[in-house]
Image (cartoon, rainbow, N blue to C red; front, side):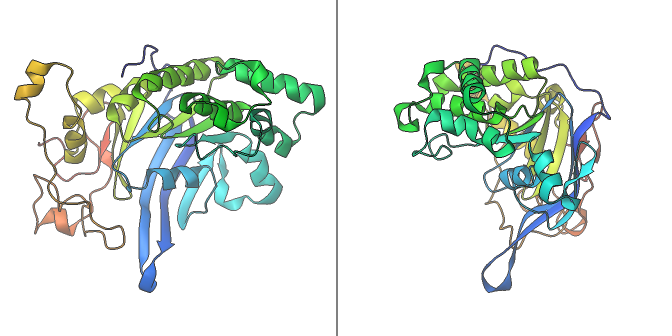
Length: 335
């Protein structure tokens, strides 16, 4: 899959729209145990950029997205959005902030109410905030349909009458209806055919340029993330293990887990692919109910010293490599 558009211009450091500070999210489990879904994440998302968030299924990507958009409360830590601590907001204050952030969900078949018309689905956020009524509401819905590449006369149709790609365009139109500044894209192309993925990615890039949007783009496909993102954060078992510019993370990755993910991407040259030796990660991802001590990746890491510092001490997310690149590894860059 290839996308033709290029990422937005790199956002300046210090111009954060979202700042995540030591955020933790625990869920109760059977027998009094606790699932450590997010375990002390520090992250910033700069205004106007696309930050890609990647990692294996179950690593906490979607949970972090729901914490950032205040769909779920944090167990501890702070999430600052446009200078406001979301954990301190409630009622009308939180409602006003929520208009500035929207989410595009992974499954376009499950995220649209089958009993509602497309027009009502797109207009529902506007209705919630009292933004438009009557003719103005209909006109706005038609404009949004046209904006995402759909026929504006489809307002009275139902979701089952559309393909997966068309349904995801409807989901994008719904997210845009309240004119947000920040959108979480939670694996928005993973449920779509490869032939449709590039169209949706190019649409998201065009909309970002037109409306000066900021994206958090979540995916497990590094090839997709590379086309869209300005910076990329890599998560493993509830922790961010590396953050870097999209070029640096591909060409100068510092964390062994990042290197393993990158080595799994197929090379579109049969001659190169035949002789290439992907870096295999041994074992299974540990349970978030009982994660390993020290570095959470040490049980699968090819350069870990365990027993030793890797099993005894949790590495800090610290500068390594190029520019503002960060990695959480005691031996960053040594693989």
